[in-house]
Amino acid sequence: MCDYSLEMYASRPAREAERYVTTRFPSGSIGLASPGDCTTAVCVQYDTRLHLENISSDLQGRLGVKSEEDVVFARLEHGAYRDGIRFANGKEVSLQLLGSGVGATLVETAKKPAVAARRDILERVD
Image (cartoon, rainbow, N blue to C red; front, top):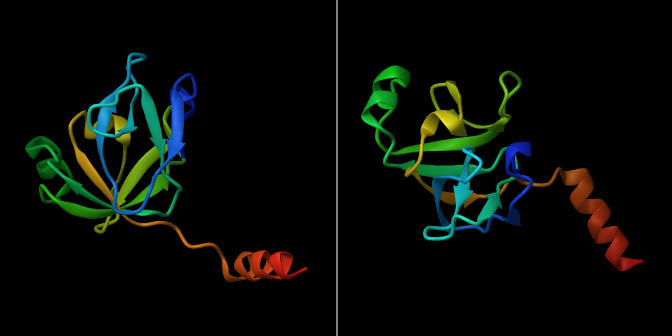
């Protein structure tokens, strides 16, 4: 979603196949934004798949990941910031620890549960 630390900024939902970059907003918090637009936070739904690129060599070493990784956008349970990512190896980090300049492409949005999807169809039919 968009971390509470970014709620003072304009925001919009993420779009599939669009490219974003981790950006340090004027408040000091890091979030996702379109390249060149540090005024609008891009909100990603939890459980959405992302492809990251330009992960720092320091973070690669500490987490045992490569410079490019497929990840899942996750809600973290601990720490001051709740927006984070989960790597395939199970490690989770806050967007704050990724730092600025990491590229992110939305691969696939989180799917609605089948029951909710059926309810949407039934409501449109009625």
